Length: 441
Image (cartoon, rainbow, N blue to C red; front, side):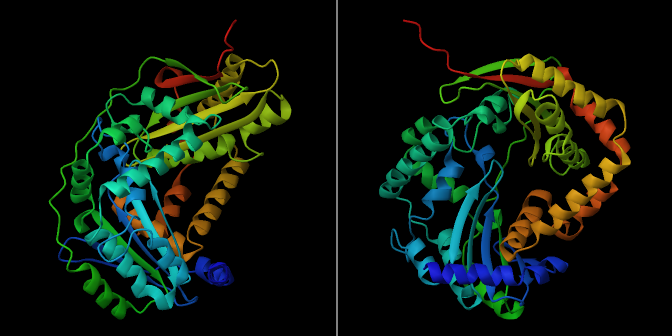
């Protein structure tokens, strides 16, 4: 298995320059059952990715039954009517392939990467997952243990593992973004087998999914195989989605959380931001990069290099389908207080809000985003993911080729304007993330 996997990786890397230099061509259409299909042909390397993205994430869950979307990421590898329990990964690896899945609050994504002579195998696997999943108590019990261990490792026992959870329960009061994809273990434990079957029947249907096939393929042969394997799958009922509108944050929200896994405190400042399709979300990407992406960023140079007040500085703009969250924070050095760090961060944001960034810094930003854009399309599996994501969450598959034009068109004036619009002290959550106090004898 290792030899085959390594060969697959070498082939992909060998042809990397050719892939990254080309515009991504694609063809898209719908099957009668509502499944959206996107095909990308690139015959430079004998590699193919088959992937399916379902429009279901943590935000689609019942508030009393959270964690289902992430749980299904695991559960649907348990087996199908034609794939015995425990055989899925063996089938993939024994045929020289790799596979994985991931879940966000907006969608769930499954994929396989095979040598291109196993294209049909990849399509069969994903059609089996969609049409013939086995959802029984054995699988539920098995994956419950897996999810429990994942939560312990990534959240409960991980330093700073619960900062996002704590931030989002304050940023969002109405929207399901207020809980994390891992969900509640108690909710999962109390769920019935019928609850899991109902979730599958509702969301894992062709009219709630996009299939992407990318790589060394023949378009006509692939279309026939797609029709053969996915065409017979029945269309599901139309999904009724709720709309959640948050009240604006108009006064500062102060929060505190004590983590038994840390010794150094941290300050997190979080701002609610617009949906990822909103132009302002793209501007906030640039703001985030300007402030803390790399050692040459403004906050890192000031707080870590020059003033030596912080061990680490970070910021990101986490845009999602309905809302986003811009978060900036730092870990102090020595006697530096969280209050001092917050003041310094505010000063740097204030500069961004009061004066245009320099032409040199602006060009540096543009160069970084050009580089990120090229890298996102530098592998067949990356292209498959982007095609699915742009179709499902942006309703514009063509962004895979022209999203960079949005970043190119952003001006220095917009960066100043958007910083003032969203990064106001009265519109944020200030989370002090602290060590657990020692118990007094």
